[in-house]
Image (cartoon, rainbow, N blue to C red; front, side, top):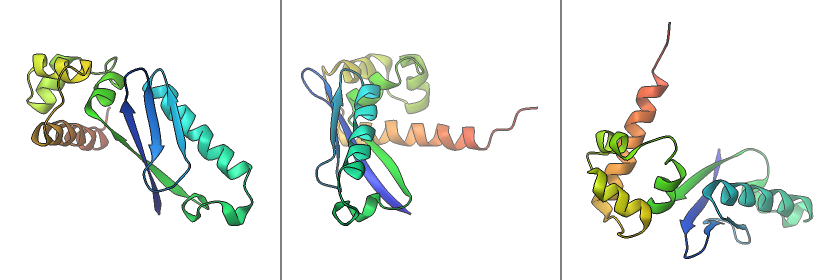
Length: 133
């Protein structure tokens, strides 16, 4: 299946979103959720107002959307779901450092980004295998 890669980043005054692998798909908003909705609307409008031959092939038929977040956007988006204490337990990164990342005060280096990503993927895998009775 085809994959549309969307990047969401925090700028000085908003969250911006754009497709990494398709030109002309942009969005933005005051929150990550608004940026996601804006990018989905951009895709819808691109498909609606262009002739089929001008619609990028990746948008024809079924495709997956993969969101690529910068650390600040990710941590802010999931702030209501994960506390810094929970994220510390999941990632091994201390709460103070996570707060610096979520506020934009500091940018995590690649090893720290990998710890966050791998911790979240491990949690997702555990949740996928969960059964309640």
